[in-house]
Amino acid sequence: MAGFGHGTRRHPRSRGRTWSRTGPDRATLGIIGVICAVAGFFVLGIILGPVAILCGWLAMNRSWSGARPVPAVIAVVLGAIDTVLAIVWLAGTATPGTGFL
Image (cartoon, rainbow, N blue to C red):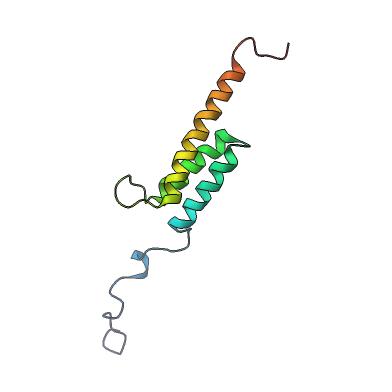
């Protein structure tokens, strides 16, 4: 039907090959990562720390080179600190001699 007014020059790419914009953008992922990292200092640090690292890394467009947005870097750094503190806390709780009895 290209000859009857339905030319292909207006839309050279098919719809299946274009980027889907249904997910959160990079700025939103950075902010979510910062919120998870800060909340992880208070509750569920062993879960929210890695989530903050993942959100920050996705907000940096899955690479360590190039321009990095500030919320994404903050999310990665605080998430790493949060994860390490949660692991140290869990290891300290599991050592002998610190039980209830």
